[in-house]
Length: 153
Image 1 (cartoon, one colour):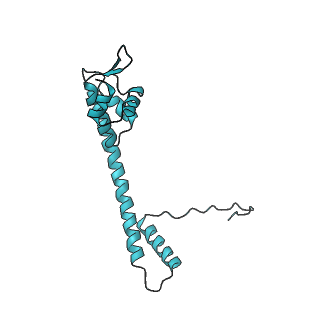
Image 2 (cartoon, one colour):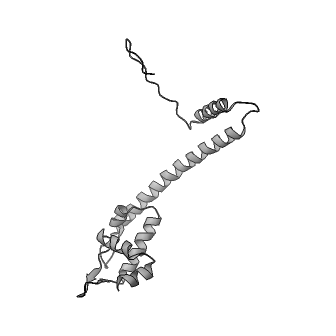
């Protein structure tokens, strides 16, 4: 099938399809005598795999080993390893996001519960202290001057 038909069926721009081809993700392309690309029917499935994997957070380099080598099949070991690795990355990201959310909720609650009449600068210090207590904000590290040297602080 020609690139226009493949683009219409896949919902991708022809330039994106050519990019995937140039990147080596699509191998089932022949050139006709007139120079037009002729894509095999399974190219549509490969494009669906690529776009689905990208939506799931895979980079093109991570996708490459997950694609079938040819029409005969997949490398099941590499496929499973890649999928499990991505699940692990997502779990780490979820944990980090949960920590970020908790930190933001502490900040919001601390700001909203500002004591009546407290100055903004004082409240800022109160909020930062609360975040430090929660372990959300690290204490700044101060450089200690060497004996006999002048501090730049």
